[in-house]
Image (cartoon, rainbow, N blue to C red; front, side, top):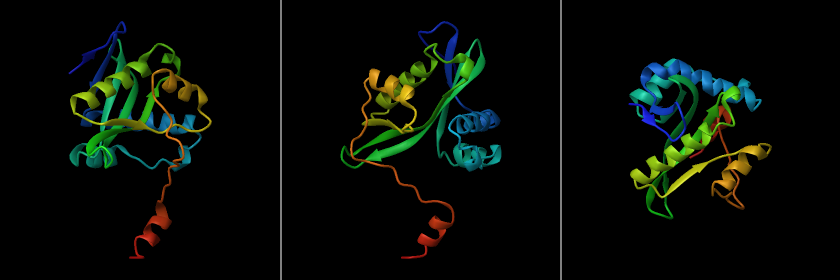
Length: 166
């Protein structure tokens, strides 16, 4: 189902299993932009299983004149402080030649609408320190940076070894 936006010829739809290769492309494009391509191991098969078959995440596809131009990848979260679910936006990416037209803002606004419809208490996402242009957009739209919190990650061999220490 295509959702019309306030922007001419720009629609948003929920991704389907058949979109897995497109989502992988966008993940790799974003990782390349962030100089992290060497950290990407996702495949279409992994997405099909973990995202679609196991309902591990959701994705919106933004289309201009019915041609995909970007995506917003997200999953459920939960706020213990609010006692309510939330939405964690993992990736938001618009094709470089399509930026500056409001498509990213429209997708984030639609995701906020989903959060409201699902009675979520929060919509959260992460921004690289160096990506000041994105951070400025988010602040202008009313988002705020959480002070005094840093994201920590454990993966690979560290995750494996630490998992055995209980």
